[in-house]
Image (cartoon, rainbow, N blue to C red; front, side, top):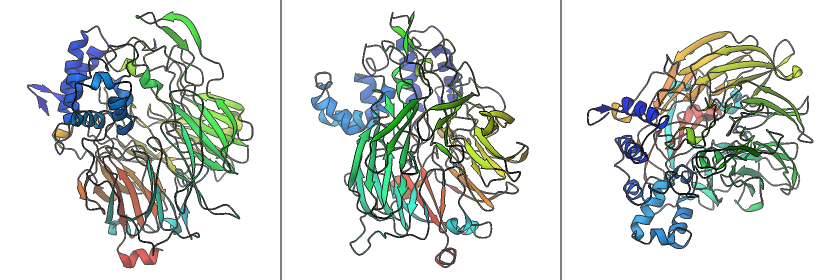
Length: 638
C-alpha cells in the first residue's frame, strides 16, 4: 500500500528513526496518525472514532499532559468504562464539546472495539430442553491440555487424524459482538465450550449448535483460557479465570453463577493474561502488567511492578501465598528522566504464561518477560522455579541478560525508555516438562529471540542444548506456545518484523525438533497469504501457540491462515483462510483476522480456533470458528 508516493514499509522505518531520535512531537503525531489511517484493512472503513480522537484527544493522550493516560492503555479497557468517564467521570468537562454520538465513537475506538456496537448483541440462546450435562466422557480443561503444558491431545479426545483431517468443514461461526480481538482459548467439558472475550463476557457454548447456555460478565477482558474443574463429591462443575483488571473468579459451570471473587491485590497495573493453573485444590495465577504501557507517560515514575505468581484456595478464593519474579522491592535509583521524574528499579519480569507443574519435584515453572526500568534484573527473560506449597523461589535461569524495555522506547516519548532499550525478548511461552525415553526429564523453553532451549530441571535449569530457529522480534520468534508429543517438540515461529529493527532473513513457520537433542527434524515455511493493502498488519508469522495430536500439528498465523501439518514430515494436509467475512449463528455479520496468542483446539472430531487480533496493528476479527468432520465421520470419531 502507498500513502502518496511513500510505501508503508518506508513509513514504518521512518517512524522508527523518528521515534529513536530527536523530533518535533507534532510531526511525530501527524506521522503516526497517517500511519494509523493507512493501516486500516481494506474491508473496514476508517473508524470515525479515530477521527474524533485525533481532533480532540490526541494532544493530551500521546504523552504531552502529566497524568493523562497514554492511548495505548485504553486498548486494555472496556468501552463502557471509557464512556462513563466521558459522560460523568473525570473526563466529563473535557468531553462536553463532543456530542453523545461522538463520545460513543471515541470510546469504542480507544477500547479497540471497532466502531459502533451491534444493535442487538444477544447471542443465540439454547432452549431449556438442552441442559448442560454433569458428566462427560472427555474434556480439555486447561490451556496446556495438561499440567506439563504439552498442548498434546490424545487420539480419543481429538477424534482427528492424518486420514480424516482433510475432511474438516466449517460447522458454525460464533461472533463476539463489537469485539476486534478474540484470544481466550476454548476449553471443554462434555459438549460445552467455555470461552472468554474482549468485553469480559464468558460464554458456555454448545459444541454442536453454537447456541449459548449462559453468560457471565467479568469486569474486564478475559484473555486467558477458562480452567475447568470437573464435578467431584459435593463440589459442582467449576470454572476459574482472571481478567485484565486483576480479578480472579470462580463460577459454577452449569449455570454461570458466581461462587467467589477475589483480586491479586498487588499493583495498580497488575493484570492476568496467562491462564491460571488449577492443581491439587489450588489455583496458581500468573501476574503480568500493563505498566510496560503506563511508562509511555513521561511524568510516570517508571517502574514498580514485579511479576510473579499468587496461589489461591480453589474452594473459597483465600490467598495462600504470593511471590515475585524480582525478590527486591523497587526503590528510587537516584536518577531522573528528562522531566526530572524519578527512575525506579528493579521492575518488570512479568509472567505472561500458564504455570507448568512438576509434581515430582514440587515445583511450578514459568517464563518471565523483560525488565521495565534500568538496570535490567537477573530474573528477567528467565525461567523460574517456585515451590508449589510455599511459593519460595527455588531457582532462576536467565536466558537473556540486559533486557529492559517499555512502551516509551517505541513511541515518540522516550523519556522513560531504559538505557538498554530492549530488545524485549520475553519468554512468553510456558516451559514444557517432558519425560524422555531415557527416564530423564527435560524442560523445553521457547523465546521471542528465536531460540529453543533444552534445560535440566535437576540442575537448576542448566542448558543441555539450544537451537536457534529464527531471527526473533517484538512479536517472536517463539511467542506463545510450543507443543510436544513427548519425543518431538513443535515450535511455531513468528519472526515478524514490523518496525525495521530486526532486518535479516526470517523463517516464519513451524519447526520440529528432537526433544532430547534439539536436532531439527523438519521445517515448513509459512507462505504469506496477504493482500498488499493489508500489509504490514498481515504477514506469515505464527505467533499463536501450536497444538499437537497423534500424527498432526495445528498452527495459525498473523495472516489468518490455519493449517494442519503432518507431524512426521511437516507436509500441510489441510488449510483454511480465516481472514474473511462470515455470518454467525446469531445471524450477524462477523469477520476473522489474525490468529494470535491462543492456539487451535482439537476435540471429538472438531477443530476450534479464535480469529481476530486488532492490537499491535494486526488484523481485527471477532469470531470463534468450529470446524468438524462430516456427521458420519464425526460420530465414528466420537
